[in-house]
Length: 198
Length: 107
Image (cartoon, rainbow over all chains, first blue to last red; front, side, top):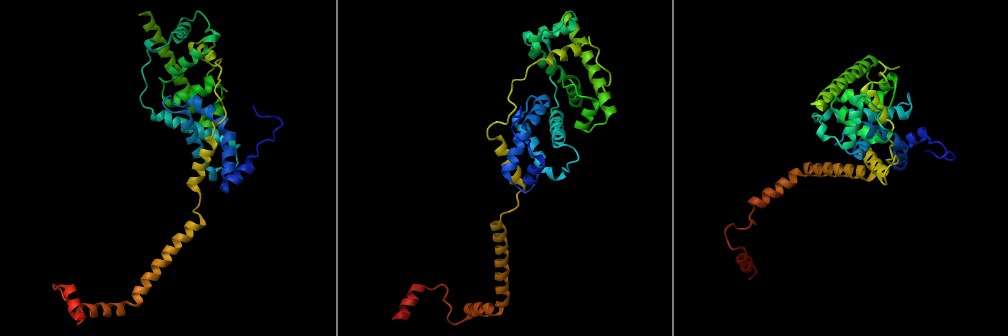
C-alpha cells in the first residue's frame, strides 16, 4: 500500500529519463510497476514457468516497446496488456493438458469437489485454498484463450469491456469464449460426477 | 456487462466464489536486485556505443585506408626493390651453407 505522505510517482518524468537511458529511473519504473505485473503473472502464468522469469520478460518487452507508448492510455493499462499477452503466449506454448483425475486430488480438494458436485453444501470458507487449486486444475483442461477469459471474468470479476482492453479481443469473441468454456466445464463436472459414482 | 451471468447455484460459480476467498499472502514488492537486473538488461540492450567504441572503430577504418593508400602509392618502388632482391647479384645462394659463405667472405 503506498504511503500517503509519499509524493505520487511521476510517470511522465520517469519515462523521459528512461528514454534518455537513465538506469536508475528504469529501476524505479520496474519497482513501481512490479506489484501490477506480478499480480497478472501469478494469475495467468502456466505452472511450469517461474513467475520471476515471466515478470522479467514482461518488463523487457515493456522497455523494448517504450518508444511506441504515446501516453494515449495510462501506462498501467499499457503494461497490463503486455503482461496479459505475454502470459497467453506462454499458455499457448504449453500444448499438453494433463488429464483431470480424482486420484490426483488432495484430500481437501476432493472434499471441495464433492461439495460442489453434490450441490448439497456450500464450500467451507477454510477450504478456499483447496478451491483455488481445484479451479486451477479444472481451468488447465481448457484451451489457453478460454482459461484466460474465465480467469478474468469469473475469478477477477472484470467486465467484458475491461477484458477487451486487456487482451485486444473484440467483445463478441470474449462472450463466445466464455460461453464455450463454461459449457466445457459443465461437461467436465458431469463426467466427474459419473466417475465419482462409479 | 457480463455475457451470461453465472447461475448463482451453478457448480462453477460455487467453486469460484470459494476460490475468490483465498488470501494471497505472497509479497508484491520486487525481490532484492530484480529492478537493477531488469534495468541493466533492458538498457544494456539498446544503449548506444560509447564514444571510445565509436572512435576506436573509426580509427581502425582510417588506419586501413592509410595503409592501403601507402601500398598503392609506393607500389612501383616496392615492386622494383623486390624484383631486384630476387634477381640481383647479391642474392643469397640457394643450397649452399650460408654460414660458411659468410665466414669465407669475412676472411
